[in-house]
Every structure is written in C-alpha cells, then in structure tokens.
Amino acid sequence: MVASLAMAVLGMLAITSEHATGMIRATYAAIPDRRRVLAAKAAVVGAVALVTGQVTVLGTAALEKLIVAGRPIRGQSAQSIAEQLPHILAMGLMVAVFALFGLGLGAILRSTPGALSTLAGLWYVLPIVVNNLPEPWHEWVGSVLPGALAGQLAGTGNPNSVYGSSLPPAAALAVMAAYAVVPLAVAVHLDRRRDT
Image 1 (cartoon, helix red, strand yellow):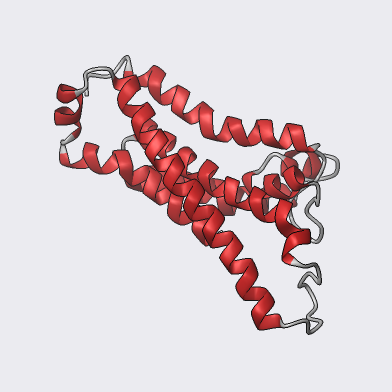
Image 2 (image 1 turned 120 degrees about the vertical axis):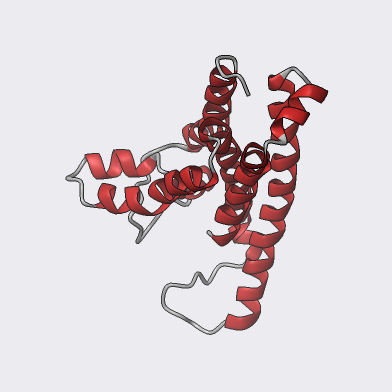
C-alpha cells in the first residue's frame, strides 16, 4: 500500500509541480503536442513505478519470510514466495497502475492537493462506504476498487477483506488498465480545451 501511494504521489507531482510553478509553459513551448508530453510522462512514471513496485513488493515478501521464519502467525500466509509469486507480481503491477492514475488525476485537476484528496477518497474512504453496502452491492462494487484487483488478477481473491472477489483475472486486468488509461484519456481530452 505504501509503495502504491508513494508512486501515485510521484505521478501527480510529475505534472502538478509544473503547473504550480508555471514551468508547464516552457514544456509546451518545447513540445507543443500535449499528447506527446503526457505520453512521455506516462512512459517514465509507469516504468519507474513498475520497477519500484516489483522490487518493493518482492523485497517486502522476502523480508516477511525472514522475520516470520516459519513460525505460525495468525493472518500470515504459510505459503512460500514461489507460491505467492502471482499475487506478488499483481501487487507490483498495481503500484504502476496507481502511479499512472495519479499522473492522470494530476493532469486533470492540475492541483496536487486536489489530486491527493481524490486519491485519498478512492483509496481510504470509498472502501469504508462500500463495506457498508448491502449484498450483493458490497461484493460487486468492492470487486472493482483498486485494492481488490491484485488478488483477483492473481486468482487468490480477497479473503478476510473489505473488498469483493467477483471478477475473473481477465476482468480484473481490464479494470486495472481502465484505472491507468481512463484518467490519462480524460486529461488529453481536457487539455485540448485549455490554454495552458
């Protein structure tokens, strides 16, 4: 979770910091095609976040195994890292998705506080609200929240969680892609109508 939030903030700052200082004008003067600017930022942010996410999640899982050292601890998986690898890779991918989501939010809102507030609402507040929905709404809506997608992509589901598990892996991957692409597409559309 920490890596996801950190990379989402990095994604936001990749564009909101330029808007806050006015340096975005120099960027657009150098590269007038705003779609190319956003695509380049998305490529860099996505690549950095993907590598960071995979290294962080894999490192955390390895460190957990060293600390736990085979002792039975309630709530901790007894599976080896190799058995958990699909879930670990899915969680690392989710870090990159969050970074691109943050970049898209930052490009849409052009404000770091606004983008952070929206992200906090999606990550923390919305799951609490969804958890209090009656069935089957809780399961359906909880399955498309960002925190639910890695478990569904890996096929492990989300046991003992506020999130749902009703999506097959292919649908979870499609929803992940939507979280990454839709905000960027909206930002491109809005950028055509804005001056700077």
